[in-house]
Image 1 (cartoon, helix red, strand yellow):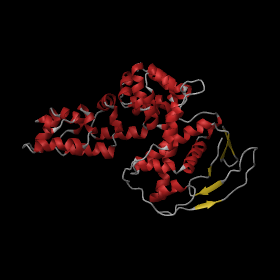
Image 2 (tube, rainbow, N blue to C red):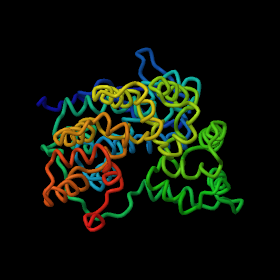
Image 3 (cartoon, helix red, strand yellow):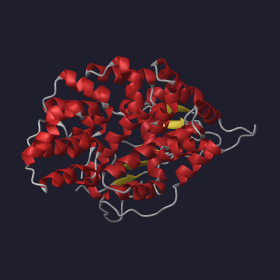
Image 4 (cartoon, rainbow, N blue to C red):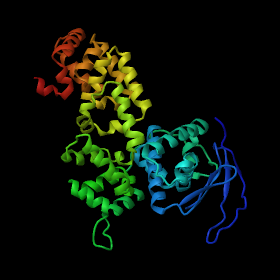
Length: 402
C-alpha cells in the first residue's frame, strides 16, 4: 500500500476584475488540479486549465454526471447506495476535481463550446477512479471525502449495512428543477415536451431521482434530438415514454459520435438492423454500454460454442444478455447447467433469459424439487434441455408444479 502524500503550494496568479486568486494544489494524483468557476476555457503555457465564466447550468450538469459516475464506482467496490450517497454529499471538492479533470482531458471540446456526452464523461472518469483505487486501496474513501487533504486514518471499502436516509440534496434539487413553475407560469420547456410525449410529471420526477443529471439536460441539445432519432428508427411514438423512463441516460449520449457507431458495432455481431426499434424498446440500456463490455459478453458467447448466427439472434431477441456480468452471472450459471449435463450453447440459444435468473433463488429450488421426487441430476438435465426451459424462464414455484 503506497502512503498518501501531498505537497501543497500556493502560486500567485494574475487577478481579473471580480475574480479571486486560484489556489493550486499538487497531490499524488496524475495531474495538478484547479478549482474554478467559469464559460470559456483558457489554457496556460504548461497546458493547465483556468476557467472564466463557464455557464452555471453546464457546470451543475457536469457535476451531477460526475456524481453519478462516482456513485456507480463506489457501489462496485461494495458500498451500499445509501453509504455511497452519503460519501458523495461530503465530497464537493473531489467532485469539483473530477469536473476539472474532464475539462483538462477534453480541452478541444471546451475551446469550441461543445458539451460532453454521458459516455465521454464516463470514459474519462472511470479509468481515473480505477487508478486512484489501485494507488490508495482501502483509504480511497478518505481520499474522496477529505480531498485535497491526506486521510487521517484507514477505512476499508467494505459492504456497509443499508441504512434509512432521506433523499440526497442533489436529488432534491434535481426534482425541484423539473417541478418548478417559471415566471410565465409554466413548467420548464423540456418537462412540457416530455409531458406532451405522454410521460407524466410524477414519472419525470422518478426519472430524475434515478438519474439527477437528467434534470439539467437541454431540450434542443439533448432530449429532442434523441426522440427524433428514435422515431426515425421506426420506434412508435407510444414507445418513446417507456424507453426514456427505462434509460434517461440515452439523452446524454451523442447520436453521431456514440449511438450510431455503437449500433454499427453491434450489427457486426449480428444484431438485425431491421429490428432496432424492437431491440431498443426491449432494452434501451444496450446503447449505453461501452464496446469493451459488449465485446466481453460476445466473446464469452463464442467461448460457449455459439455460432456467429446464434449470437446475432440472441443479441436481437434478448439484448439483456449484455447486462449480465460474465464472471458473476454467465459463467457460474453455465457451470451450474453444465454440471447437470446440459448443452449450455443449446440452452442459451433457446432461452437466453434463463441466464438472468439467480442460481440460489430460482434454479436450485426447481432442481431440488425434482431431486426430492427421485429424479437424478442427469434426468433433470435432460428435462432442461428439452421441455423444461419454460419452467426456469418464468420461475414457476414448487406449488405450481404440484
